[in-house]
Amino acid sequence: MLTRRSFTLSLAAIPLAGCGGAQPMTSVRPAARDSDPDLVPRTTPGWTAWVESFKRRAAGEGIRADVLDAAFRGQGFVPGVVSRDRNQTEFRRSFEDYLAIIAGEERVVEGRAAFAAQRGRLEAIEARYGVPAEIVAAIWGVESRYGQRRGTIPVISSTSTLAFDGRRGRFFEQQLVAALRILQSGDTTPQRLVGSWAGAMGHTQFIPTSYQAFAVDFTGDGRRDIWSEDPSDALASTAAYLSRNGWQRGALVSREDPGGNLRTDAGGPVFRTGPNHGSIKRYNNSDNYALGVAYLAGRIAGGGPLAQGFGPDRYGLDIDDRRELQRRLTAAGYDTDGDDGVIGPNSRAAIEAFQRANGLAVTGDPSPGLLQALR
Image 1 (tube, rainbow, N blue to C red):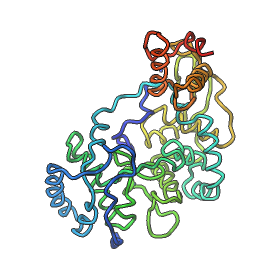
Image 2 (image 1 turned 120 degrees about the vertical axis):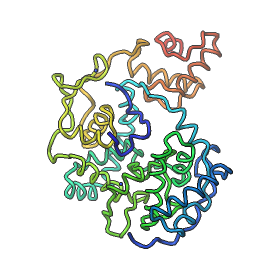
Image 3 (image 1 turned 90 degrees about the horizontal axis):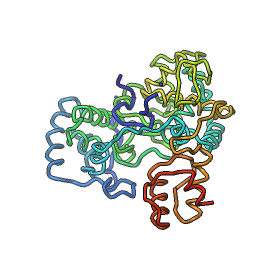
Image 4 (image 1 turned 135 degrees about the vertical axis):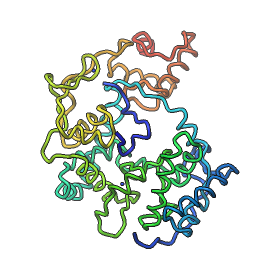
């Protein structure tokens, strides 16, 4: 199943038991707005030669010469994009960790504020497409943290880099052509056509081909602008996507139900899923993603946490223990970069530093003994 973004790995990849005349275009900035120097586009002989060959193919597909010239001005090869594509690993996080990352209390508070700020627009989108306002808001939250993390890498550079690299060359050449069609249609300009390292764009992270197929101009200004500070077109495009991929008005997504059909981690909550669970999986083909969106939507709408908690992890710690461990490590000078209860790379680095400084075996693993030592 080719979903909106199935080409890129998500935290949700865890097993469970989107023609007018072109607008004036200018070159993009020579560097992506990112602190990582490997994400700065740069010209290389190989990439440049590939682009010249590609331009001939793109012209044969109807992309105008002026669009090609403007689109590639200031673009380049992005080495960090290739390294991220080649070094993807499947995230084997528990469902509890996944929820803590995408639907923790901070994300819930932010979501309720974002929902309140966009209530009128979200309700108008629901009236048109039949997708509940809180579901659209939740996808917004999961994909870009309500617009805070939309990506800063020029899409022409990222997709041309991955097409040139060749590992998934055909797919990314299709994305590059679709990105050029976006520019040719006048929906945006090269300097605003930015996204993630793999080319997902805007508030709800559409890849270029999905943008071409599903994006809508909800504001009526003549452009399908998913990059704007105003998220209206992006949110409506997400609802349009779901509507055209089987969404049923009023049908169930999922709900916590001890007698349900979808079990998560051992001893964790059980869910009953409905037809719209599958529709959300068309957006991202993962049970965890669909469950997480539904859960976050319920919390945004005022609902409470899950009734069934999760038991201790393999280290004998529950989420409250892990949060306390993170807080105590940070207070002791070993920064874990947050206290969400997820023992990821930052927490493990902090644990290792503490263990090393205190003459302990350096494992990076949490434990009740480590927590006790920090008390």
